[in-house]
Image (cartoon, rainbow, N blue to C red; front, side):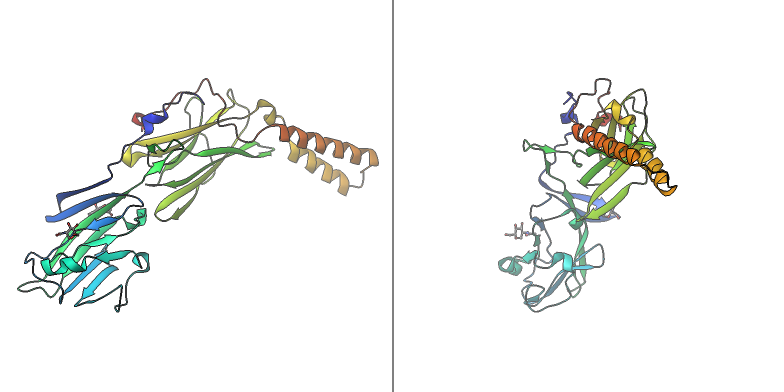
Length: 308
Ligand SMILES: *[C@@H]1O[C@H](CO)[C@@H](O)[C@H](O)[C@H]1NC(C)=O
Ligand SMILES: *[C@@H]1O[C@H](CO)[C@@H](O)[C@H](O)[C@H]1NC(C)=O
């Protein structure tokens, strides 16, 4: 490893916290929780009256049914209609209802639980009430030493193919939030042309695969950089492409040969030459380890989060 200031990217996440703020002129309670932990969303009618025989309804983002309680019936017993995302993960404080405490717990939070929740008392007298709670689930990625690091894991870079056009490099990044912008760069920090990134989302986290094809350049050291501008994070991984890979042209050899086959000029000697040639290429490729991210890259400029 180069002494890349990995720890410059580390963002220390507060584990849980509750703050009050004003959003759209109304009181919004903000709850921050680390992913995987349980979140308590607080709520209580202003009357603080006994709610055991009353109705309260929790929703997410104005539409998803999170938890409804109606005089002892609720989503964990007789009531149906709960959004699948929350099935089996919500509980309330039955003993606290008589004090007007209609808070809920969301177990095992994921990024997808982040959002704006409402806690409504539609039948409250003298007047219905609704409370607003914003839940922010933060990533807790740990590196191998168990240190909580930033909001994106380091990309994984590899050589995935050698074609007539050059060496195809692949950068993979799994489980980032918010969505990262992924780029291939040369060692001077110039952005390289790449294919369309392949982006997928699972549990509110983003995975990105970005391929590029490089041919001989002044340098054979390349970086895959993942930036999350919103939160000022950047992580990168580097790969050194062995210079001789730029000389291998297996596709070219094969296509010339297939052409020869179909034009009927294939001779036994040529077949033997192909066999020897292919074996040579295979052997050469076996000796080149695919993953070179740990090799040194002396001219690389260390990135830091301030560059975002
Ligand atoms: C409701 O009760 C729970 C469990 O005792 C407690 O943690 C929470 O702070 C209470 N919330 C309110 C709004 O009273
Ligand atoms: C909650 O709503 C506010 C205002 O519409 C929005 O800015 C914020 O991003 C939302 N929070 C989440 C976690 O979606």
